Amino acid sequence: MTISNIDFSYEYDVFISYHGTNDQNGSTKKAKEITEFLRENGVTYFFYQDTPITKNIPFVHTPFYAVKCRKFLLIANEHISTKSDKSIDSDVHNGIYQEINAFWEKIYDQKCGPGDARVYVYGDLTAKDANCFHQMFSGNAHFDEHNGIDTAKKELLDWILEGKTENKNLETTIKNERHPSNNNIKELIISIYE
Image 1 (cartoon, rainbow, N blue to C red):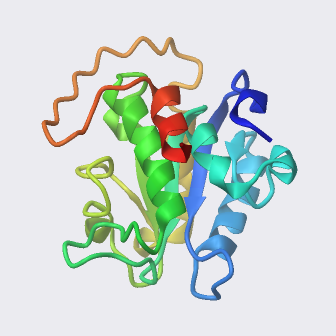
Image 2: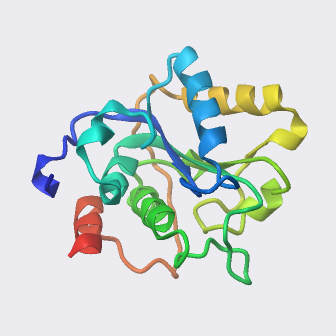
């Protein structure tokens, strides 16, 4: 499949990012649990493990779909690899890092708001830790199972459904001098693969 064959016309409610696909300590099992909960509540999502379209696309194209979602959710536990500053280790989690950067560009271009990207934390990971993963997550209220699984899932569902039918003309001003560019999202993603 080439970039020109990807269907950009469909939008999902939320993009599900996770770590450790083939690692028993990864977050894939939790992601499956959460997507089942979302499906039962009528939420559309892109989750590489069970979104039907993914049977025809390679994993490297997931950043294209991240920008086609209204919200971005990283599901993580204490086994996610981080650098000394607690940011996500892009050498270990290159796929996640590319998905995050694609959605970050969408936020930077004001196509969604800074609160539209969050982390669902469980295990020994804390919401405070999640703030350090990437500037996109900094200062956001994350979903923390330490407050109770049912509470975390209810807050997650409320966040996803919030504004689902509202007009999306956001007038959010995002200033960040560390951001490398203000490129068009598609151009940024295409450049990743060139």
